[in-house]
Length: 615
Image (cartoon, rainbow, N blue to C red; front, side, top):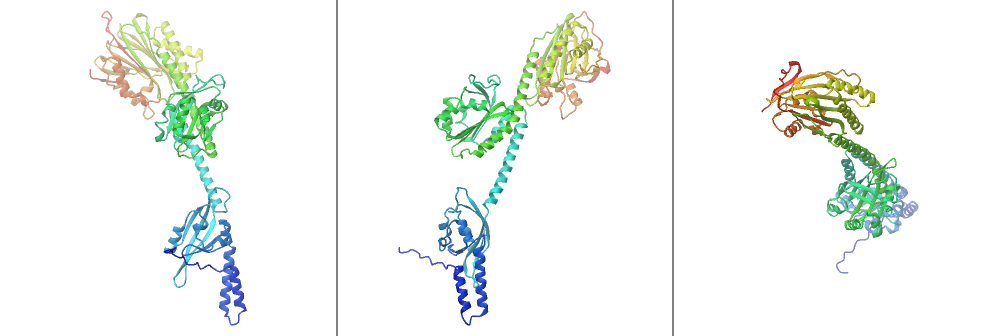
């Protein structure tokens, strides 16, 4: 056509046969000088070296057309050498990453370049890409004329794949280690499950849910008659799925899988179920309800997996994972990795499940015991509160109690069983019951503790307990104390004077070394007594003396309502930072009986610290 530019014919290099024929002709000719013969011999040798080199070698002209390539390169490319000559690189190998821009840069600047090129050639029998390492430099004539580009190529596919395999293996181990650490770093069930969900999204999925078996709704032995009920503990989605995925289940909601459903079989058989290219029927069976099937389809879910969370064949829960939209479909390698990942995470989640259930059981026991009705004698007002440690710490055996006794007296009790968990809570109930029984039969706090010590040894209680008893007698305006290894009480008189009583301290109950004493101190009408467990004043980052000093200087107004005083105590000492449970008991005495003279004031050696608070 008019205007078309005619490309000049490339100056194709002589073949090895042509070079050999030319050399023979020169050797037969008469009058040819020896240097010319040597030159032709060297050219022939060089060509043999290039042609026989195991690395691919090519020469291209300034238009990037093949002038020469050896058999090794033709074999790599899967195209006969003759079909390369005179054609451009992109015309011969359209499936190869184009490197023409780089070659033109070499032609323009003369700076050699080394690059890795990937793609496919006609020699490939699989869909996997291959990789070559290429070194290119410019060819120039003695006159400076640019003749073209020479390249040397080596296939490095196996080396790169081996390196990629090592990288993938390292990433896999790092990921499994992260699953171990993130789910095992806490005993908080919600945090452990959310750590797994956040690990899955967005790295492996667009939607992930972690459910935990509800022990009250799911039988331990799989059955075709009973549904499996799980509670949804954690969710994670990509931002664009947050709204559309909400009908699939909310945090804390129960998810019930009907008996005989695929999901029930997954949980019963402890085997994952993979959905790839799910149709309506598969999605219907996968979904616990028809409504949820519609939501899965509306999300654009195209592949998913449901994985049981098990530890030593014990079913802990399940994980549901979906990919949607443009995300690639789950591969066999993805499934294998997800199975390993959830298996690692299951151990940490199982620990959190067991701890949470024990924590809740112990807490319910504590509340049940502490909610039992308490009675005070005349002239005494009391208010107690039990504050469990945070969900990441075990429930202890702290308790408080009040008991009305004959002659208008009231016994105050605050104690702390050593240890944590259900056994500590159970031991607390035993000590509480023993003290209540003995208080009715005994007259003084020291004798009550002595009898309690003997009873604990007789019953072989496996936990020791600290305990403080205060026998209030409003008519005589006094209180008698006996202390078994416990935190001292705080006395606030009507004028605001605060005194941390320094009482003789005996060993805790259950040790077998008890020798208890009783100490009586005056308690004017309108005074406030504060008894507590060590969790109120002791912290890991400070010694107990600092906490006791803070207790002794609390700004307590003895005339304020007891709920207000209790809020003051909690606000200033902040037991939420404690790693232990806290029991606090406040008591205020009423008016004095005018027929009974008051006792004298406190001896100096009973006073630990004193001060005045604003009235």
